[in-house]
Length: 445
Image 1 (tube, rainbow, N blue to C red):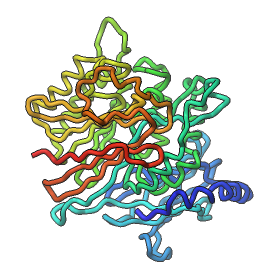
Image 2 (cartoon, one colour):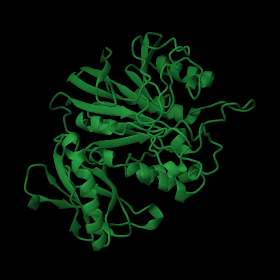
Image 3 (cartoon, rainbow, N blue to C red):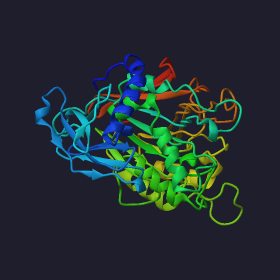
Image 4 (tube, rainbow, N blue to C red):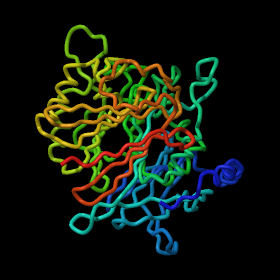
């Protein structure tokens, strides 16, 4: 992706936002947050934007580097207060493998930003070339401070410059691994509070260039779903599900187990799971004990078995391969965890990598069951409080030596190689983009 370094952009953003705020107020509407690029397919791309009031919105887009006169324009969407003035705009005249420039058009007036706005359609490589190389960014646990609603004393969030570092790494897509927002006491029980928290997160100035130029996918965990450690008993989960679907741009799938989804990027498959919607209370004594639920597990096993991807990425909020029965790990539901991992092994599904968050530390875990190697890459936290060395000795016997990180960090995975000979190169970096550790994993035979 062609991007201007954030370090050159950010000093210009503050006066720009002040100017745009006063100028567009005179016009009667303005962009409140975004635009954000959502899912990408070969013939369709989603772009999300939030305004400050009701208006008519369109997306105009054209091949990057070509004249704007060749632009396509999307159908009109009317924003409303009931959906937080959000518009989801479809670029449905794209061709495969092209990078596009785009702009948001409000009531017929194109909006401008002091950074590029680009998206890409996926490449038609099958039966033609080797799969394209690409880059994935990932992370979890994003806390944005809002003093009047936060706990007293030291702010829990910080190092927002991490989004500058991610932006400058020029990933094609980013996967948000849960706790992307932290709903607080005033937020939990009303649509007004939930939408406020999402809007506050989505409006962070340091995030705007990243939203606008990288394709974003997401799962959730307890703090997006409800209160800390919330489970299926949370009475207002229908409100948080509605907000998640409104503020993110995942593809919709037929089977509904909460916010589960699926997408493919080039030759890699990504399975997005919901670890909250069906989750029984952690300390329940009688009745079933489940985190994902058997229906969702069977859905996953079917998709994994069908998949021909060299690596199959299963995104879920809490750790799966770690055998430390701590906090929200799958190990506190040992029967379901064993069932899931043994089903993967019994079906001889190779190349499974769980992508997880939640823990406020990063580590790579692995286990081998019946000669089937399964990985779990935990990346946490982005901007919330970090664990330090607290979890270093908690008893995860499956941790890969040298991969523990207790400070704020993010992950990058680069995919390269020829067809049937692919590899992924994992990098973990601190908030400033400094490499902490890296590891290359080759496609299983």
